[in-house]
Length: 446
Image 1 (cartoon, rainbow, N blue to C red):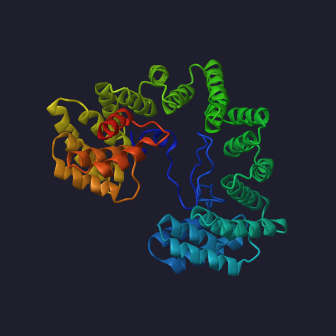
Image 2: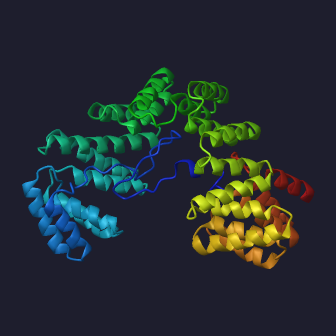
């Protein structure tokens, strides 16, 4: 199946905002660049701030800034006016104006570290880690003598620590990541995100007992987070230690057998490791725990699809689409499950669904890939070729798309290029729904 639906996309997908947004640590991955919590949200009960937001929305930029300048003089817990203006510009997608406001904040308030931190976040998000580190370091130095309120200083410190730890995580400098995360936790001991990231940093240094301790602290702080043993299983799997991962996953299921997220994690792990019978068993239990779980429906559909039970896959993906009509993965997978069935009515329905997908998600390569495959299954080779060309034009060829294009090329007699694409598709280490078909096709061409 595609990258959209094969592994982790549906589990923890979050929308990253420029100056805010939740961070998902469900899978123990490094904190995504730019996905950092806001330092301070202007208190809405402050009338001047509310009025400034209204003026900004009405296009009165100068009036909004003037009100914010007045507000910051009265309320010392607020950041500089230009920092708030940067947040307002960012909220409407005016990144250039946001950066100009931050640069203005640096000139007006050179000893205030907040603008440095936000600019560092932007550089980090853009992959410019050297610049980001310099700006975070500037903020770190300014924080030592910062005269702002204790609350502002604490929040800015936490964001700076998050950023510096993120840089260290990207560089796999785990001791440095540990140092900054521990500094963060001194200010906010129950922060689940920091605890999970610290657990990962400790695990990477072979401090597994300490890592598990931090995960348990996170669970104590928020009972909704994933079972600690399940997260440890994910850590072990990422490290290539499958036997230990299996032991930890069993321990997780023993500890919380009726926990939906634990069952889903176990099912996902089994799916990722191509243990489809085990994945099916776990997701069936998850559906008994919560028959309306969107995640469980999606995973049940994936497992059924990979086991070539396309009718069952269709059922789950259609139900998921009805539950969340705007979800691309549900719509896309529904079309795939339909088109793999031999009934002409199903194939025609697949075409309808795939057409809806390309109309709604025309900028998504996988929408065109699926549309091309549906057309191919209907025998419309030329149209399939065109649609798959749209998918390939992005330069990001998923294994499934590579197989679909190779299949078309074989029918056109372009066997040499088809062989290359099939070899490329078969190199993937993640679950690949057309692996058997790709192997058979390549063998036949040889």
